[in-house]
Image 1 (cartoon, rainbow, N blue to C red):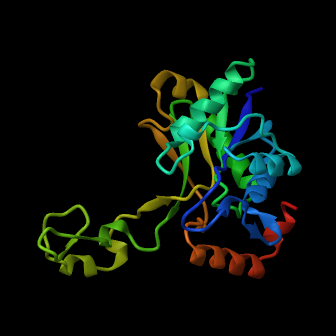
Image 2 (tube, rainbow, N blue to C red):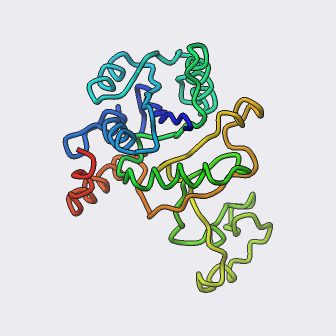
Length: 240
């Protein structure tokens, strides 16, 4: 049986939403939401939190997950990469003979998850051996091909185009390719690929398409989550 570890990053501090990883939503911290979904996913053997905060580590243990190490400060800053904290966790596990086959990357900032979808993602990735990774995405409400940049002269231009003629962007959305945005719901990574390539995603990343979800980056995002939870309380009943 494959060894599958859910790895939840939860460093202290946040500029957009202060202490957002432990902010309460429906009476539970965002961190607790991600731990609960991971623990209820039948494909996941173990749930670890990578944090630089003793307080967050204590909260992790109260919620039934593991925080067996503290993440070093040098890989816990605003510009630290996902690869750094994932490699740190893998090295810690490998040193104890506990390295998993797969890492399920679960971000606290996307708290409203269905454990059954997490299981579906993990199984799908396991059954696609040539894939280097899996990332969850949802379809953008408006194709990215209808988006704009600002040209050096100060006028609008279509994204990825050198032309500032915009009339084509007004065509019906059905005339444009569908585009997708990564949403942090569930990413599945292969330890063997990470060790071989020194990357976490690579060049053969398969999509796992989820319903549209909200990621917390601003206070407005958090208010939207509270609204969603008030309208659909069964989301919480699945986890707590």
